[in-house]
Length: 92
Image (cartoon, rainbow, N blue to C red; front, side, top):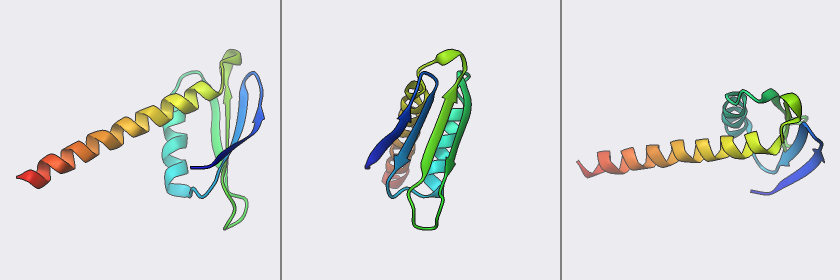
């Protein structure tokens, strides 16, 4: 996945995620919002074929990249659990 950090501040990050659509971005946004240090997590796809831009702001100048990384790890863990369950179910 190609990403570009468009803006990075004490409590704000804006990231472009090339080639991603609403399905992935909604899952990521929802997982980021589960973090209590996050103030705002949103994304915009300006035009039909443009890349989404994720914006995250945090409370109390918490590093805004950390909630994004943590959310990605949680999503990856959920996918690993699903794969494991599917593999076990297919063996039966």
